[in-house]
Structure formats: structure tokens, C-alpha cells
Length: 381
Image (cartoon, rainbow, N blue to C red):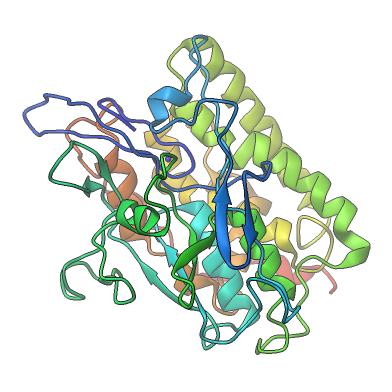
């Protein structure tokens, strides 16, 4: 699945600087990243080579808002692939790769969900950054994802034990000193070659689904089965456009017209999901797929964050009977609840976008119990 003085974040966030005295300074980062975009890097002999983009690479969410006031997401940069082929520059090996995430970021949470669902905990290690952006260097005013100084500083977040860096920005610069793109999560890291393999969540989840099957505990779970691939791809497209990215288009719109357009499209897509889920357990039938994971990470954040923070307040998810029970159903699927840290989610959104929430006040929220019973078992498997 995202700033600057008056931040807005793309995916999950870019960069911003913000003082409690309300003076906003120049900032430059990006944040949570991922989508479905074209390759911009290749690997050769285990080394990543970057192309110069023919288009300007945005470093803050402000730069990703057009003159019309609409929010436009830019592509991920590292797009190398891990393969079961042992001759690959990045072969699938147990213990070789590490996943850097933020529990706050829906795009990173997709990847963590796959790691848990496939049973790859003992194959791919992972760690989380702190939820709120902080200064990433003393020499400039860039704010972004940072690691805690100790495991006691922020529950759920850990220091970087692999490279000893203090921020995701430093990790990117360690891998590529001339890097000038977005400092996003997720990051799939190669411990052996000490480089970023991939920072595009849609690539990472596909690799986790198939390339580590020789080592996965849940080898029989296929979240992208051949016979459903056309339907999954179709659903992913309209869910991404209307819902996953749609909430950001609402929240980061700077003019009324693009907001109106985005919020209309968002609720049309949610209504469509509600109708589909009135007839079947999951979004592509009666089996859990990739499309469910991609939809879930937005739904789980919706009532607690997007309704208030991103002005998506026409209707709550819990006012949709099928969508709400569906969200509880996915949450209660093996391993999924451990990927949801609502404290991190709320701290990040409400504390990292001063242009939207200048005082950084975190609303009390409804504290929904997603472990409560649901009615989705009424559909035959």
C-alpha cells in the first residue's frame, strides 16, 4: 500500500517537520510505500543498478499533489525479485532476508500478513520502526521513519540490529549512497549482500506466496491460485484505486473538487464490496486470497483513522453489516491479529501529519473489538 511542512503522506507517509510552536519547516521524505507500478531498478550479479527516472522523483507528499489539488502516487524504486532458482542473484534461502515494516503502514502490513499466513516466521526475520516520524539527520530537517534506541522505548518497535542504522532513510543510503527517492516501508533486505531487494509490497507478497514454499509452514496456502488470478487482478485494481489509495486521495486532497471525486469513488467501491460480501465469504469467492489481504489492511484502519483524519465520514465500516463481519473474520484468521497494532496506527496518522492535525491530538476512538463473533461462517467453504 506516505511529507513536508504541511504533510500529507503517500502510501503511508512521506516526510515532514513540525514544531509544537506551529512553525513549519522544510521537510523531505516519503514514507510507507508500495502500489502496482513499473520497474525502475534491475539486479545484476547481486548488485542493484538504478536507472535515472525520466520523471521527477517526489520526496514529499506535497510534491505528489498536482496543481488541480489531487493526490498522485509515485512508483516504488527497488524491484528485484527473490526466486526459487538457486542461480538467481536473490535465491530463496532461509535466514537470508529481513522485512522492515511499520505496523502503522497498510502497505507494510500486507507483507507482514503474508509472512504470518504462510508461516515464514522462521524463514524471514522482521522488525518494526517507531510509529511517529522523527528527525532522521542532524544536518537537515527531514523527518521520517526511525528506529528506537532500545527495545524498551516503544512497545512493538525494535532497534536495527542488522546494520545499526537509526532510520529507514539511513538504510536506503547505506544500500545506495546516491539514492534520492522515497524512504518507504516495507523494505525487504538482503542480509548477505546488505542491500534492498524490493520495496514494493505487491511484489513482496507474491514472492512470499510462492518462492519460499520449500520452507513455509503453510505450503498448501496459495493466496494467488491460478484459476482465480484474473478475478484477483480485476478486484485488486478497483479496490486499490477506490479504497486502498482512495482514502489517501480523500485525505491529501487540497481542493474540494478532487476530494469530492475521491470520496464518491471510495464509497461506490465500499458499496460494491458490501454487495459482493452479501453473497460469499470472501471478496473473490469462498476462499481467502491476496485480494482479501489487500482490502483488509484498509478496512481495519478505517473507523479508527480514516473517518476522522482523512474525512471519510459518510459511513463507518461498522455500519456495513457484511464488511464489518468480514473484517472481523479476516482479523481472526490465523496470525492476522498479530499484524494489527492499533496504538501504532493511531500514533502515526494523528501524530505525523501536522497539516491535517497540527496539535497531534489522538482521538479516543471506538476501540472496536475485532475478536468478537462474526457471521461469515454461514457461507459454505
